[in-house]
Amino acid sequence: MNPDNNSKYILSSLDNALSILNLFITAPELTPIEISALSGINRSTVFRMLVTLESRGYLLRDDANRYRLGLKLFTLGQLVYSRAELVSIIHPYLAKLMKETGESSHLSILDDTTHVVFLDKVVSDSLLKMDTPLGFHQQAHLTGTGKAILAFESEQVVNQYIKLAEFSAKTEFSIKTAKEFLEILETIRENGYACDEEESEIGLTCFAVPVFDASGHPIAAISCSGPTTRMNMRKEQHIQTLQSIAQEIHKILS
Image (cartoon, rainbow, N blue to C red; front, side, top):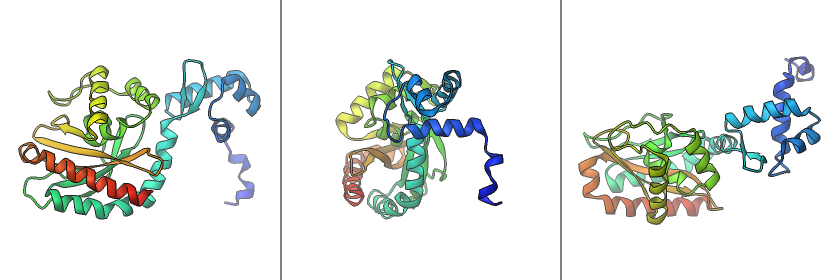
């Protein structure tokens, strides 16, 4: 198909929505009236598009009815970066983490507003081990890696998570309320690491730490996971190893 002849196939509604998103390249925040004036799209159409984009996580709206780019767009950008660069950079460190802890190691990022996706792993040689499929999605608050990332995200991102997440328990140890979730995030910020203590599956425990980019933003998290009894026996040692390796990764990314 000749690109020069593609105009007849363009969907005007989608084209308008993308035009609205492009406005935020130069303007961090905009009101619906400003968006209508800058885009040339009538206000009623702008309103419907803004509601749709907000509902899908592409835009965030504050109490003053001003819009900014949402986590979904950030996540898509991170996915491009992570799948092209992050996995190849971090994989040797996952191998090192598995070797030093003896437990399976994983790399995760936020995949959308409420879920993490597991991008890479190095599986333990032990008979009893955790082996999460690559590409597996899970609600972030049910995972160590998800909590490790969200604990160091902005208040706006965390509030958006609480607004959209389902705090339905998978096990008796799962986080059940937004209030409990916020308290746990505060503890993670104080301690520098997160845990999944049989919150996703009975018998399995995970320790995780965030991976920060050069600007100090949590772009991912690494973890070691295994049977609860074995993990808890070496908890302090595992966490020290995780934090040390995360620092090594941060230096490379910086």
